[in-house]
Image (cartoon, rainbow, N blue to C red; front, side):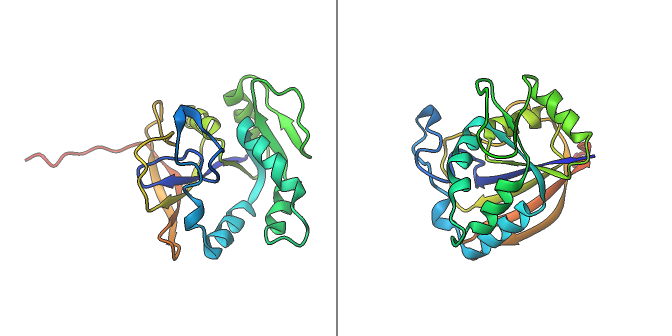
Length: 206
């Protein structure tokens, strides 16, 4: 069996839209693209590398796939990010898209139209960790269909007040176990949560 792991960068108020660059995702007139970059440290880069080093494959939406395909295959061998590039280039990549008919990046496979069913079938195979990176729309689809086994969340110390959030309408209620947490020198908290069962309820009423 494989596990689905969502890796996400979030603001303190839960925004996950366009962390990496201004033009990454302008949907809704989002004006804050690139909000993650000033907080990125060497320690965070090492942590991201460790997380991505566990991947057996990637689950990507079309926008993130196109961004990655335009960048990672072209990273020079002597670049600081050459190690991550080698990992991402070699991994099998499963892409959710309503419009793509072919994929140029090596080891890429287009998922069929029923994405939740296709991912459920992938989970039945022995592929290790299938990591969702970026791909907010895809992540929300998997969350709504209760297909996510683990979340690796980096929460940044800023508020944006607007933008797409990772956990939106349709999120399936679930209890989560905190597996680990650490903080970078820039104040970013990196926490790993694993599905822990059903939500439990109680009351403080007298």
